[in-house]
Structures are given as C-alpha cells and as structure tokens.
Length: 276
Ligand code: NAD
Image 1 (spheres, rainbow, N blue to C red):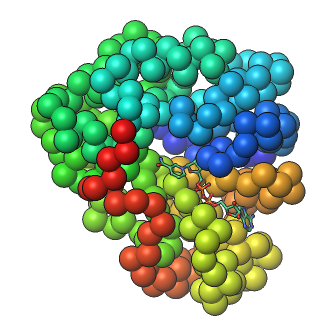
Image 2 (cartoon, rainbow, N blue to C red; image 1 turned 120 degrees about the vertical axis):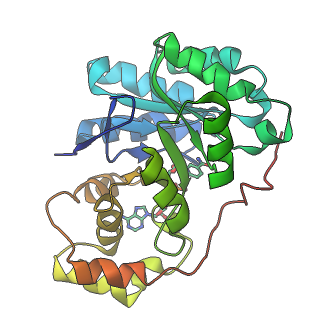
C-alpha cells in the first residue's frame, strides 16, 4: 500500500492515512489492528478513553514491524488534564511502548474553563523528553488555538477535528493552514450516520474513477492535504479505504463535493463539551 507521508511542523513524518479505533471493542481491537498492519497500515489513532490501548499495543508487539516504521497517536482525556505526565505514562504502559509519535489533548474545554494551560505545558515537556515526536490538540476551535499559541508561543503540530463534506470547517482549516497546523479529519465518512455515500456528487465522482463512494470521499480529503484514519472493522474495507492514492478527482468533482457543505455535525460542540 503506497501511503504518502505528510511532514508536520516539528519535522515529524506522518502517514496521511491510518486506522482509527474509536468504538472498536477491546476484544476486537487486537485482531483489527493486526489485520490493518498486515494490509500495510502503519498509522493507528487511539485514545485513552477508547479503552483499547492495550490491545493496540499487543497487535503492534505481535506484528514484528520495526517501531520506527509505525506512527502511533493517543490522547489525553479530559479528567487527566491536571496530570498529563501521569496519564501519558499510563497510556505508554498500556501500549507497551516507550514513546508515541503524536500525543493530543482530546477536548479543549476543561483546560479553558480552568485556570491555566497546564495540560499543554505538560505535553510540551513530554515532547521535550523525546517520548512523543510531536504533540497537538483535538477539537480545538480557532479561539482555543489562538490562546494556546499566544500564551505559550508554541504552535500545535495538528488539530484533529470533525470534518467531512457535510461539515467542512473552512474557516478553521484556513487558520490552521496559515499557522502551519496539520488538520486531521475525524469522522471523515461522517461516521456512517448519513446518506453521504449515496449523494449524487459522491457517487458520480466514484463512478468516474471506478472507485467506491467511500474512496471518493477519502480522496477528497487527502487531495486537500488532510490526514484521515477512517474506522472500519471489516477486513475488505481496510484495503478499500487505503486504496485512494492511485487516482485524482478533477476540479469539478472536488467542487461538487465541496458544495455538499450543510453545517451538519455529529460530535458535541467543542465550545461547550466539558465532560470530566
Ligand atoms: P468514520 O467517518 O471513520 O466512520 C466510520 C464508519 O463509516 C464505519 O463504522 C462504517 O459504518 C463506515 N465505513 C467505513 N469504511 C467504509 C466503506 N469503505 N464503505 C462504506 N462505509 C464505510 O468515523 P469515526 O470512526 O468516528 O472516525 C474515524 C476515527 O477518528 C475514529 O476511529 C477515531 O480514531 C477518530 N475520532 C476522534 C474523535 C475526537 O474527538 N478526536 C472523535 C471521533 C473519532
């Protein structure tokens, strides 16, 4: 599988496509990650709150793939924002690794409702120690990013946000481009919760290239430079979702998918989501 890398603002290379394991049951995660690694995936996106880091770690260990060929992301959960070092060590222990490639603050609000940017400073210490090649954030709006940058002078490597044709986050994407923050799209297929894959713009683009609608949407993402890790628990879809680097959507096909913007999001509003 020829999956290109993107270079983050730290110089770290990240495979543009990986596998996300949100809502993959712990009992199923090891098998799925093993299958993905066998199929050629090298980038896995997990989080403490997904409760499957240990299984991700077991699949990594069993794969025999050299550590430096893998790209592993995990995330700091809201309740741990006041103890990032401890939470990070717990994630490392569960993963059975001595470093990850990317560590993210999962949601902004606990931090911004609280006193300080302690969580971000904690992540910067982790990066400094070499135990995460890069650090970044997730679900941060422009105002959160601005404050983080203003107060610490350090620009996150990525912002992982809900982003798909029905919810394109154009203003945020432009801000990130300006600042050199790579955008990771979570829910790149709108979480399978809509008729996105049946919409004429998507179907027409897919048919024109002999690809599936999911491949057309994923291609639309990567052609704009975003990083994606579509989730699937089906082996045949692992290959399908990663086979998007051998065709190119035309300007008109891209524009037709752009026109699907509907302001429809599925995740909670990052400005008010404050589960602790
Ligand atoms: P997704 O958009 O990847 O949708 C997954 C669903 O799409 C699957 O359950 C399946 O129903 C469908 N699907 C997948 N491949 C398909 C194909 N080839 N054809 C047809 N249907 C297909 O949604 P997601 O899992 O929520 O997002 C991907 C990853 O993003 C997650 O696994 C997780 O790693 C990350 N994520 C992060 C956050 C965050 O707050 N940072 C939130 C949600 C998800």
